[in-house]
Length: 81
Image: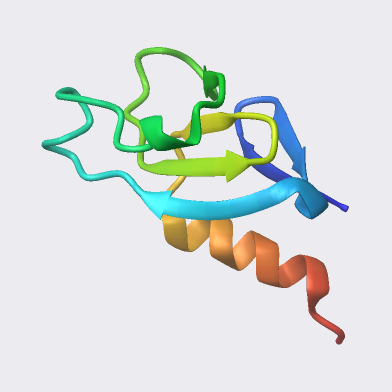
């Protein structure tokens, strides 16, 4: 299953490690996820503000979608109705 994280980017949920809310005042100062030593990719256009960091086994993505939206989409993948 794949999770849409913004723009045209989809990630395999089996490779998802964590979701972090981006702190608005710290986003321009430094990348708080430098400890993961993964390639960093912007999702969507460069003019959009990054709201959430998506950490996978392969990379760290900066998503313009809110954390609550991504969590809701993730939960919908596994909901049984």
